[in-house]
Image (cartoon, rainbow, N blue to C red; front, top):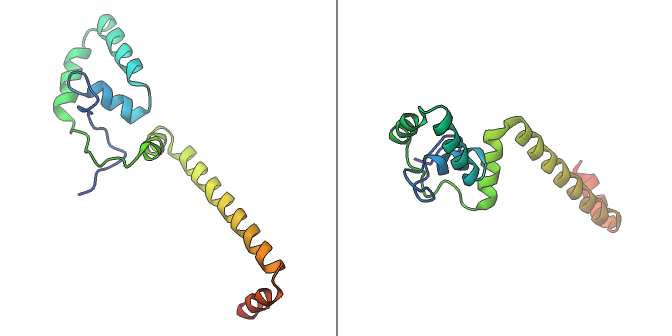
Length: 124
């Protein structure tokens, strides 16, 4: 079964203790140092973060090795988790740009090759 990219996983490979902070950093896209600093600050101010930390560590699954193939894929899925609508707009914009560029290439080759242009017109 393939891993679910929008799910939280603890990251023991990059973690210091149980991998919860590293997993939160991977899930949100925030630098792991800042997640650890926030965890320490919450521990000193609120106090119940330690039992919560252990509960998360106990209940969550380990991050699968095959979750991401490269850094770009990791960034993409972090963006999906942070703002799915923004990611959708970005993907649509990339497809529009590709479509525009493909139309420009097609226009260039068709306009400089009348025989190809005639063949395309016959197909329409």
